[in-house]
Length: 361
Image (cartoon, rainbow, N blue to C red):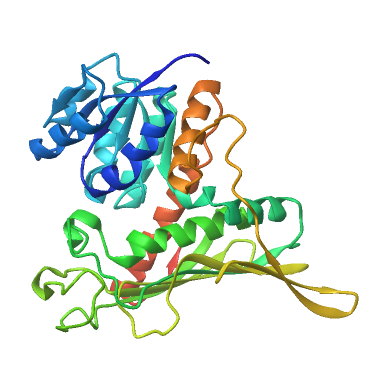
């Protein structure tokens, strides 16, 4: 329990700087950031100077980092295309792995990651930090307690009006595998399936659209995008039928003519009550013959096993991950769960390309 975990960061770009490294820096009594790798050496050097231990090392080849037997844990923060093979190599090298979401670009890559974790006995988790929000923790506990009854309909929402990321490789289909569906839709779907505790899809049908990507002066939050580099969808929608008959709809967009944008939110309908996370957390039910809507205001009190840390979801996510390593217990996000999310996302893309529903065995 007193062990300090030595962590290596593979990929020192936006998500590592915006989430992983600053969150891990809050857990200094339990972790040391001792290795930083990026194909752009300057990024790794800068990360090392800001977050590393005095003896931390810099790499441009992740395989060289993995040769360091003193590293216990690796965080994979690279574009989606390389999640799979880097994670497998890290697990095979004897490291526990937190991989940034989505699990992988393809279901085959994600399955290889899960198989490697089982084969090596090392822990693997995926960075779906929104599970740690106080509202989502409340809804999960309420669902487990049966407050909603049988949840048979869910709506996963990740809708932006004009917020297309114009940096990095977000618009590159080869590197990322898609656009808003795989980037932000993945969060909404993860939350919905997690709260429903339903990971058995029967069939999926979906469609993607690239309708606004060629427009100029589109009032984008991060400035104009380059249409020639915009090789992914600007919106995607899916209809998912689970084996028990439950239905989930998934709506995602970076650019959509919508007046009510909302991200990483969901609507759930059960036999006893329903919940909507728009504008806070609202639970609707029937009580004493009347329709009621209760506004819930959970407070994020941190976690019992960590004191003195910020209560943002990213830091709480890192805290529960390190706690799982220290206590040899399961992390919040199991790789089997993340695999199902990737399986469904890939099926929506395949359905969009073929014009056909996709059925699972």
